[in-house]
Image 1 (cartoon, helix red, strand yellow):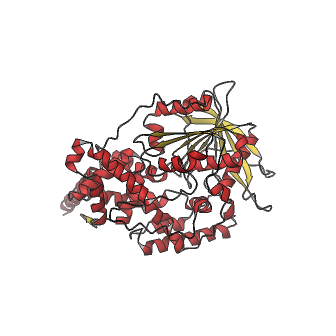
Image 2 (image 1 turned 45 degrees about the horizontal axis):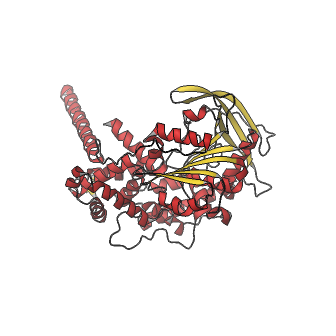
Image 3 (image 1 turned 30 degrees about the vertical axis):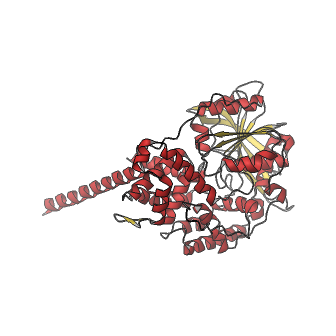
Length: 516
């Protein structure tokens, strides 16, 4: 049981946040006191990947905290370079992981890529290195017992944002320096320091926005770019109506499964009824509607955890609220610590914030199901707390034409970065672009690992040849059947707790008898 509970909590973290914010610990060389902007030092060491250790170069790059400020201090970011096995490698591949608010040092490089390509990780400013935009005030505000989507909770979170940001600024941190263009320039500095004429980019989720901006700022530096789970400009928020359309898509797939359809004829309607009439208790455990909504939204990012959400909601409509109670409980373990909150705010706000928009207002539609609880949790607090925002240039905030050779890979059921948005808003502007939409796949985890060998072959071949061959990627139908679902885990956990209590009471009674 414990193993399954841990897996569920890990899945929730991955669903909401993509790669985790805590990263592997390595020893990097210390920067020289005489270091200047763009200087680089390194040493050799071992990097463990896929169960074996390989030789790697661990470096530290020195960069300006704010390149728009001539008096800016210098900061230092970690770099890892894994050399290709070939003596005559092609263009190196730079990895750009998801976020914002997550580390870029967690990559396990694709083995087939390492045959012919160096693989390079450059730490994200604000997360990796010594300057981390931690906001413990926000973490504490998110931990409150109240419904996190209630107005009073949002007000508290907003004030926590304000306190956090001004505290960081008072500590000497240049808030305006922690943007995506500055992050792109960090990667460009490493490219130059390592002597690469051109590089390939492998990006995921938030990293795809960095890759896109990189292509606008330094197109001559990029050979080819593969984006997985594509986030076009303007989409660090979610479209509530599109979320519900995706749930209706799942509902149609559900109805084609005869076993599932007998248990629940209309999945979307069942979820709507539970969300509109959510119980507030299961046994002595409180159920917070807002926590359930946020947890459900994060779990919908990937299809295996999405199936667990549906299982819990169907059970709740049948009178068993144990599954949604566990989802409510899981919120407190995962959401408050899922991100380096200051980094998330600095990168997302400076790129996508619209002060005229009410992010918490959901469309008043009778057919509405879930909408976008993360919009309300992350963006509505800005109505209550003042966070200074220096927007990045407009040409980097809106879709622009690009000649970079780009492959977009999306899942048709990606709640985090819907394929439709990339198809509609970005693909037409990529003169040398192509998009592959994998039917019934979700976000990055599904794309990378449901058919891992085939996807890795696709990525490697594209970098080597510029050809995107999808002939060997077979259709993987959605499977709604759940072994260890939330209701089962909750009941087994409760049973274990009761047995422990009985054992403790029995032990105390036995001891008291012995002492009398």
